[in-house]
Image (cartoon, rainbow, N blue to C red; front, top):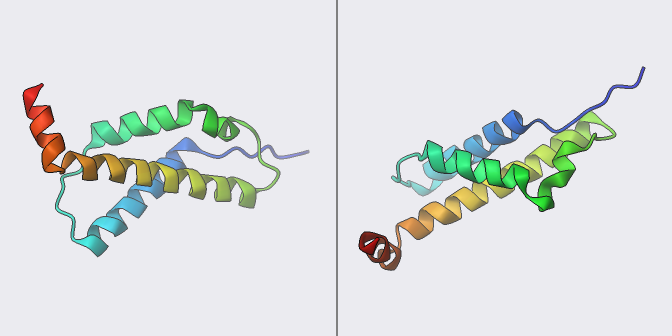
Length: 98
């Protein structure tokens, strides 16, 4: 019997949250956690053609874990980039116009 192993989206999200928590601690960031933004970024990441590989089986548990690590890093970096841009004064003034 062959075991089929897929990357797990919940694991990717958990790993991304852990990365972001470590970053917040290391950089003394005080920005509040935006769960809705994180979920939106995760949903879009999982739907993107770039990450179609997440819906395909992996040859080994290690390959699945490596893919989860890579996707979680991408998710964390996208979330971080968006939150950093939100703090930009120019972006804040443009948002205030909306």
